[in-house]
Amino acid sequence: MTNRRALFAALAALVVGLVGISALAGQTVGAIGVGGMTGDSMMGGAGMMAGASMMEPMMVWRSGGGPITSPKSAAASALEAVRARGWSGLSLDEVHTFPAFYEVELNDRNGYKGPEIYVSRSSGATGPEMGPNMMWDTVYGMGSSCSSNLSEARARQLAQAHTSSSLGDAERHHGYWEFELTRQGLVVNQINVQDCTGQVINEQMWQPEVEATSSGA
Image (cartoon, rainbow, N blue to C red; front, side, top):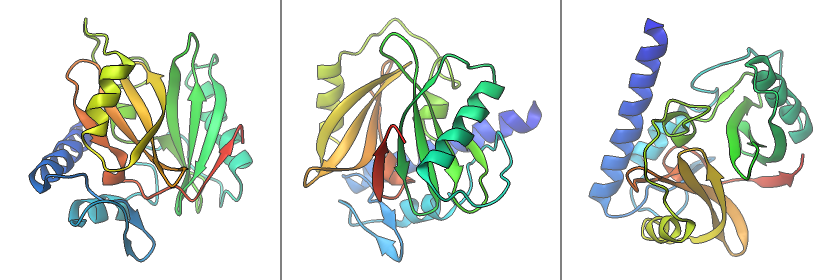
């Protein structure tokens, strides 16, 4: 339990630090790709530090058995991991392919999204995506519920003020909204807005741009 609390504290400090640096810069921190920085920002130090550490999930639920070579295999690993935690009602939505890992998105019931899962491409280690997925989700993460029920329109307005990319589809999570970030019609990343506070976190701070999206794996 002590180790888990320490991990949550470290994650909270990382997210708060990244948000603070981004605010001082007056813009979002750019995405990190192979060989350097891409994206909207002119400063990338915080993103580089975070991106370099994302070869493996920050919290590992299941150790890997070796390389994962396809979105379909990543989806199977993610579903095994969440079902082992007793979350049997979740279903597969889509898989995003990043340089070092797959991000598997799951559907919950009643229009809500489930947890988002990282699967390492090199080791197969599986665990939750960092950031709002762990910090703000009130069912599958450590988020706290509140009386606020932020509308999609208001959340979209807040998110757009924090990125020069276009916003795509909205996804309703327990405790926050997530919007696709698009560029030239392609989905490249996500941005999140918390229900209780309206705080905005751009996943480009730790997550490189998407290589490809495979709907339904």
